[in-house]
Image 1 (tube, rainbow, N blue to C red):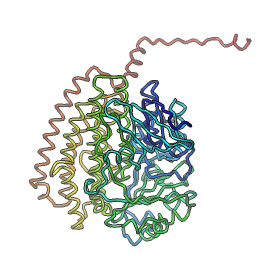
Image 2 (image 1 turned 90 degrees about the vertical axis):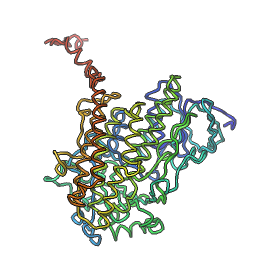
Image 3 (image 1 turned 90 degrees about the horizontal axis):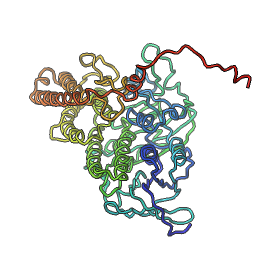
Image 4 (image 1 turned 45 degrees about the vertical axis):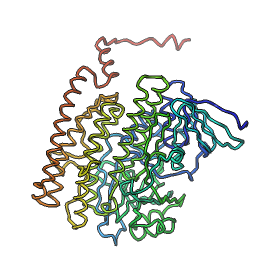
Length: 591
């Protein structure tokens, strides 16, 4: 190939993994006739060696894949289902031979929105082919240089192919190439120092195995406790300074991803960075998982000594974008990577669409959406701090997951469903909420985590909080509760979902959860402490403030249907009249 050949595209996406392929498909669906190039050094046909961490979806990522990318049938037909989350803490660290040796919070029902466990190698291979069929151009090569220009000048991406080099010119450049940090290293945009990541200093080792004997974990018979699979849940096994995931891949039921996230101040990488060391660790600390791995056939082992990083900027006024692992990664607990990527992608698509259409507010979108993505990324970063102290303590960690799930289902999920993160006014409000919850001195969650620190230090038993149930707080509340009927009424169009109801309700139950937590840890004096009273007053004030915003929102939306398509069908149905007749098919048979 001529090494000086140049080709011009609307968008060049560097990386054909999950983030890059999903970004390409979203653009192809949302922007007619867009010209996209995808660059990746891996061939289109992926192998088992391309399996990777980040295989589990939760509500936001699963909804994005099925609804926004139109992959629902594909996921049902090709990927394993996910039946929520299950958590396990050893009763005695010296005996971990079976699930009976653990305190278990098992999934007790199907999740509110269907989720999936992804075989990433297969998913990325299939999605790349779909994108090529839709018109995207794939270059099987490596990006060797970038020339990032200012404003609307064309960027240049230099790509080394097997038979030469080419220069790709692009109006917009997306870095979805993962930990190569193609843009991050080019302009010093990536943050790697644990001190700037709320002290997170984690690594991960993981293995893929097939042909396992899953009866070691579960016999599939639980008539009195669950209507969901204990095997097809994402199982989390906790211990001092670490947690372990167990994720089924594919539909054979006998292939697994098992990995540990470890905190370096408790478990140094050198002690767990080979398959033999990993197995030895499991044999001593989670014996049943050791036996599970030994029952199957080894596929591959991987170690990543540094997990956490984030970006200073994610959407630039100079038309470059970073997303997926190229933008941020903190900890696979709660499977945040794919959900963060979904928000990244939808924000990037809207910026690129607006810029290509030369809309007046296109640059405003770039600025506001960058603000949201950075704030959202920092919020996720915040909730992974001090894990090493809480993970192995069943009281502290179960309370922590309970409180964090309140925020997920009450605020973050409805915010995503209603596309509120694309609304300028809401972005400003979200920044204020995040500041109160996380970033300001003595924030709400800083207070929660400080209490849990004391629970660990003083070895208090404050109970095991089960986020799947609604019988441990007040008024039959549980974190999985919805404050708006957006799923039942398919309020999927922008701003139809009442996010204010979720924020308001979550703040109210934070008051009650805080009172219960403080009472469990410190007695009535904890409930009556000046700090708790101060937070209660603040939360009540925010509750009233959001209530006013909700009334304004409901007034503006008073004549807007929950779902336009359903409303149109109902209006059309008013002219319906039953016609008791059949068209004759006899003549067609004679012909």
